[in-house]
Image (tube, rainbow over all chains, first blue to last red; front, side, top):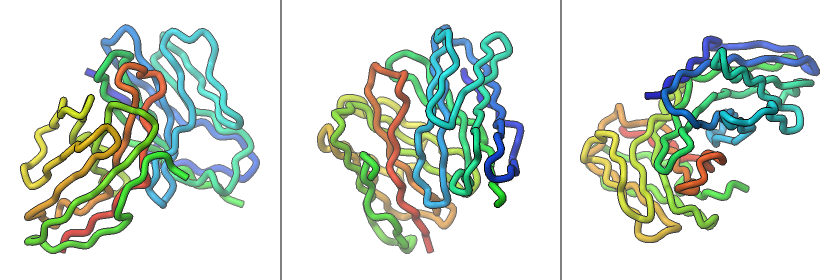
Amino acid sequence: AQKITQTQPGMFVQEKEAVTLDCTYDTSDPSYGLFWYKQPSSGEMIFLIYQGSYDQQNATEGRYSLNFQKARKSANLVISASQLGDSAMYFCAMRPITSYGKLTFGQGTILTVHP
Amino acid sequence: DTEVTQTPKHLVMGMTNKKSLKCEQHMGHRAMYWYKQKAKKPPELMFVYSYEKLSINESVPSRFSPECPNSSLLNLHLHALQPEDSALYLCASSQVTQSNYGYTFGSGTRLTVV
């Protein structure tokens, strides 16, 4: 069984500042992938970044980076230089690296960027 | 533009109506999914199709009936729905075996049952 925990229901950040969204997970699978998705009010789930459980380096994609600490089972998302368009719901998710592995989501964090 | 296309974007239906949601992808993905999402909640998995066969049904009521006519299309047939079924319905697709790239989602259908 997998469990994803996002403890921040809402976060506020000033435009151009960095923000960290927390995610911890629990799984018995030896190999897994961790994902972050952004969901604006329009509803589409937008893939942001991926981290494999055996990856040695932390993943980065433009302004997004994933702070992966395997021993602590955490996969925090860092957004640098926040923009107004970053205001959205953010979901952390996990999937075992096997066929038919289901994607499990955390409860989400609503990020609001202030001008 | 999203690579998973869902139609319609919005749907209002009565409790006695029959309607269908449609999802289409042309990425060669052989796994397709239906999720239900209530406001400010995470998506909840409903069905998984793998190689056009239903592989997972998460104990979804029979008033929801999925169909996968071919590798690019996924339908969700709706009948005799309840007001509590009002939600955003998301379709997604993925490679069956390459789990490291997660799912590609559509923009969803906002369903209101009156």
